[in-house]
Amino acid sequence: MKYPSSIQNLINHFSQLPTVGPKTAERYVFYLLRQSPEFLQKFAQGLAELKEKIVVCQNCLAIAESNPCAICSDNKRDKTKICVVADTRDMLAIENIKQYNGLYHVLGGVINMVEGIKPEQLNIQQLTDKIKQNNAKEIILALNPDLEGETTAMYLAKLLKPSGQDGIKITRLAKGLPMGADLEYADEITLINALKYRINL
Amino acid sequence: MKYPSSIQNLINHFSQLPTVGPKTAERYVFYLLRQSPEFLQKFAQGLAELKEKIVVCQNCLAIAESNPCAICSDNKRDKTKICVVADTRDMLAIENIKQYNGLYHVLGGVINMVEGIKPEQLNIQQLTDKIKQNNAKEIILALNPDLEGETTAMYLAKLLKPSGQDGIKITRLAKGLPMGADLEYADEITLINALKYRINL
Image (cartoon, rainbow over the protein chains, first blue to last red):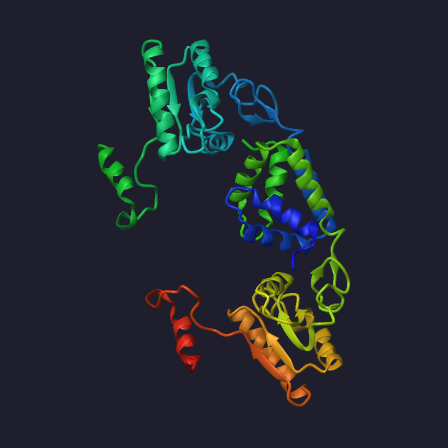
């Protein structure tokens, strides 16, 4: 006893999405079965056209609406500051807090030994080129505080420091307790970091 | 700062799937951005064609490859047993254990006061018709052991019992400890049920 092939086929496609297993995919498909054909058509069209309309900014390598993107072509931005992020999503997260006025550089991932992602596969050459070109003064490594992010940050710090022009500053985002956290329930490493990087008041 | 419209549009579509929020939808879309255009085209085609190729068996109301479905048109099936399920997925789950030889009836949901799903919206009339037509002897209510499933089971039991031909049996799936469960960690209601419905050895 199996599903009709059109259902099974769509379940297989959804199953390939990250964190989606066959059961979740089934759930999605059965939800879609209850939607209007118009909704399905529009959803399908969005999928089919996803890549056609996408532009990658050749300067910061972010997915954008134009090349160069709005940020890279903004003259009011401080070109001597470069914030290094893993992907466009992280860049948008930082951009949305409206506190940063420098440029970005999208690595296109992080070093990941398990998945076999090596430094050569990341946009590192473009980063070093840009640092020289812009005569950059600060590189902010805005990578996730997890194993892969830390490895990548270490690698980049080592790579950029010695080659660096005099006075180039390499920083990374602060680690500590997130707002609203409960000391009692904070994990050990977060608490260790919170204590280690404590701030003078 | 926003995503290009083709990305935002697809994020909005994925966000409508059950349990998918904007962040998860974003993750899906960024995963898809790394896939080949062929994959996206096939995924899109599957979506667009989902409903076109779907048939509903007019007998058991399940989604199937033909009408009547393979089960309803199988003469070796015991037509006096009807297993009532909420949807086609539950029917397949039971069918896959290969222990049941009767027919099915798909309700198309369960009574849900919160979401405003009333008995009139379920395929109950067709069920009572089929019971009379087949001169059914047993109705197995295979509904989830949650609030909505129990409510629906109660409603159906009450509806079918008095109207029933002499000797019609209304049963439901057993409640108790699932295989591999740990008594210590079982929730209270499961443990209460396990004790209440204990079996003679």
